[in-house]
Length: 406
Image (cartoon, rainbow, N blue to C red; front, top):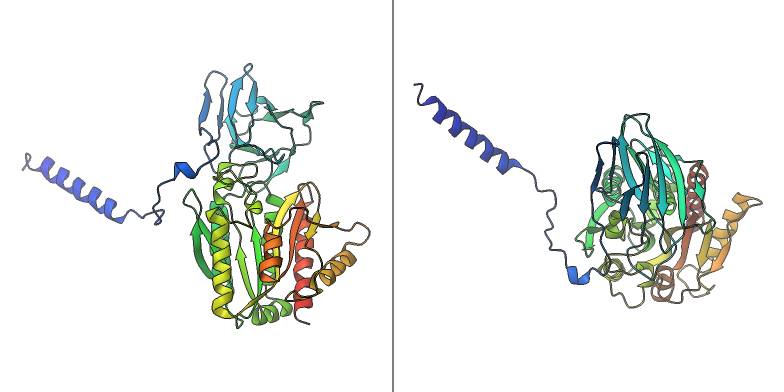
C-alpha cells in the first residue's frame, strides 16, 4: 500500500490539473494576430522600474500608461521622458505611470518633453476612482519641463494627465448600460490591435428616427468622455421626458472608437498613426470604417434618418464646433434652438460656438454631408469642474429631448 500511494497522488494531481485546464475561461474569443505592417506608431516598452536601494518603484505596465524613459538623478529624484506616439501631432502631451515604495518617502518627479510642451496638471489616485489634482507643479519658461513632489503611501499612486478610463473600464460601463436599459450590444468591427468596436442601441422605438453619440476618437480626451457618459445616461433615464424620448427615437452609441490609442496612452492617434477624426472622408482606418458601415447598414435596413449626432471631445476650454447652417437637414433648425437653450442655461458665461475649419474629414462633417443630420463636435474643457461638466451634460440632454419631441 505504501508504494501505491505516491502513484495514486500523482494520478489525482494530473486529473485535477486537467480539470482546471478544461474549465479555464477564454478571456478574448476574438483571436487576432497584430498586423505589425498596419501599426505606424512607436509602441512603448512596458516595464517595472526597480530601485531597491532607494525603495522606489515605477511602472508603465498598465492600460493608458505613457512613460517613455526613466532615469534616476539621485536617491529621491527621477527624470521621466514623455514623447508622442508619432508625428506630426497635436499638443496633447499625455502621461501616466504608477509609483510605490517606502511609505512617507518624498519622491521628486521631473517630466521632460524633448519636442513638446507640458499641458495637463497632474492628477493622482490610489484606487483609480477618486482623483486629486496636484496643486504645486513647477513648469519652466519653455514649458518643456514640469516638476512636482510626491509622498509615497501604503497604496500605489497612479499619476496621470487626466483621470484614467481605459478601454476595459469603458467596456464594463457598456455592459452595465446594456443590462440596465435593455440595449442591444453589437461588435461592429475591430481595431488594428484586435480590440472590439462596440455599438449600443435602444430598442423601444420603431427605429425610424435616430440620435447618434460617439466618443473617444482621441485618447486623452477624458472630460469629453465623462460628459458623454452622463449625457447618455440622461437620455436613457427614468424621467418622463427620457421615457418618451426612447419610445420615439432610437439612440445609437459608440463610446470607444479608438481603444488601441486609449490603452497605449497615445496623445492623439490610433495604431495606424492617424487622427481618426480626420478619417471621415476616405475611411482608411478599420475603426472609422466600422462605424460608417454599421450606421449606413442600419439606416438602410430600417429606412431611418439620423436627426442629430454628437461627437464628444476635449480641448483647452468648452466649445461647440458646428457645420454650416442648412435648411435641408433631417431636422432643420434643431442645432440653433438647442444651442440657444443651452446658452440660456449658462447665463453670462456661454460656450463659444464655432464653425469647424477641418473641411469634410471629421465625423461631424460626414454626418451632415452624407446623413443630412444636424451634428456637433461637443468639446469639454480639460479643467472644466467635473460637477459642472455633469450638470451641463444633463441639461444638454434634457434640452435635446424636449426639442426633438416637439
